[in-house]
Image (cartoon, rainbow, N blue to C red; front, side, top):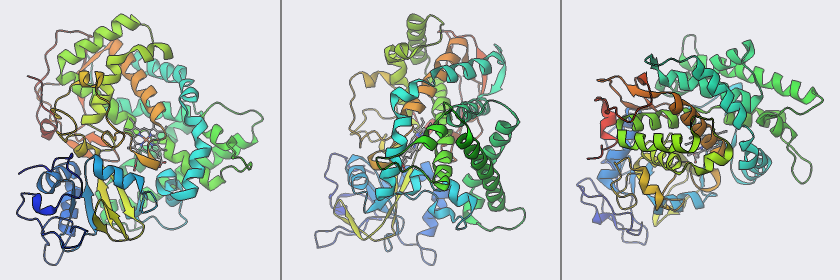
Length: 492
Ligand code: HEM
C-alpha cells in the first residue's frame, strides 16, 4: 500500500493510488474524491462510527489507504479527510469557503449557557472573527505573556512541594489540576479558594461530559443523560464567569489577568466586547487541556528515550544549576525547545480538527459541496515521511536544522484560526517541565498499559502512573504495552 508522496501536486489523479477501493477520475478538470466504498443503507455513517471509536487509528488507516484526500463514502462525499501541506495550504488560506465552527455537531440548544460558552473564536469567522482577534491580540502578545512567569513558577513550586521522591502518582491527574490552577489565576485572577474549587470541579465535569461519545450520539435533555449534565455544568460556569465580569467592571483598578485585559480591550472606534461575547472568549481561553496533554506526552517520550532525557538534564543543569528560570534563561534552553517541538510533532494535543464548506468550492482540483465536513489531522500529517524524515522517531536534534513551513507543521494550527494562546502555552509547558525535571524523573511503572485516546485533546486512556525517581542519567526505559507503541519507534 503506497502513500501518495506529499511532494506530488495535490491534483494527482486518483488512478495513481494503488488501493482497490479507489474511484475512477473524472474526465473534467475536477477529480472525484477517492474513498471508502459505499456501505448499503447506512452510507458514510459506518466510517463515522469507526472514527468515533478510535479517531487517530481511523485517520491513519484512511491516509494509508487513500492518500491526501478521501471521502467516508465514495458515492456521497459529505465527510472528507485531507492530509499534508498542499491540502493544508488550500484549506487554511480559503477561509471564506472553509470555516471553523467548533461544536457544530454537538447541537447545543439555541440561547443556552452552553451555546454562549462555546461562542468563542473557534466558532466565529470572517470580519467578526478578525475583530475579536484584534481585541484579544495585545493580551496574548509574547511581552504581555512573559509577565505571568512568576505566577506560573510559584503555583508550580507549591504543587511540587507536596510531591516526594519514590512516590507513585497519577501524574496526568496532577498535571491537569496544576494547569487548571494556573489557568484560573492567570486567565481570571482567581487564587485557590472555594469559588475556584467550584469552578475547577465544573470545568472538569464539563470537559468529561462534552467529550463523551454518549453526549454526541444522544444529545437529549432528559434526567440522567450526560447531555443534561453538560448543560447544567455550563449554566453553573456561566453564572460564575458573569458574576466575575460584573465584579471586575465595578472595581476601581484593573486586575492583572487576561479576563481584565479583555474587559478593558477597545478597538479604534472605542468598541469592546459585549458581556455575552466576553463569556464565550473567556471560556475559550480558560481550558488548557492541550497544555496538560503536551506536558504529559513530553514526559512520556523522555521516559521512553533515556538518551534524550539525559541530554535535556545536562542542559538544564548547565544553564540553570537548579535555579528557577528567568525569561532570558528560557531563550537559551535550545534542547528543551527542540524536545517540546518534537513532542508536539509526534503527539499533537489537537490531533485532528474540522472545517466546514460554507459554499460549493474547490480544494486543489477536487469539488467540495456546501456543508461538507472536512477533517484534517496534525497527528497524521506530522508522520508523512516526505516531510519529516523517519517520522516515528523521537529525535529532538532534527529541529537544529529543520524549518518546516506553516503548513507542514501544524501543532498550533495554521491560517486565521491558528492558536492565539501559543506563547502562553509554550511558557507554561516549558516552566512546568523545567521545575518538575529539576526535582524528579517521573518514570512509568514497568508493564503499564498506555493507549492513546481522544478527549478534547490527545490523552492516555488509562492515565499515566509514574514513580518519582531522582533525576539520573542511568535509568533504562521501562517496558510498556498498549497501542501507543504504534505511535512511535524507539531509537536503535
Ligand atoms: C500546547 C498547548 C496548545 C496547543 C497544542 C494548541 C493548539 C491549538 C490549535 C491547533 C488551534 C487551532 C484549531 C483549529 O484550527 O481548529 C488552537 C486555537 C486556539 N487556541 Fe490553542 N493550543 C494550546 C494552548 C492554548 C492555550 C493555553 C490557550 C489560551 C491561553 C489557547 C488558545 C487558543 C485559542 C483562543 C484558539 C482559537 C483561535 C481562533 O480561532 O482564532 N491555546 N490551539
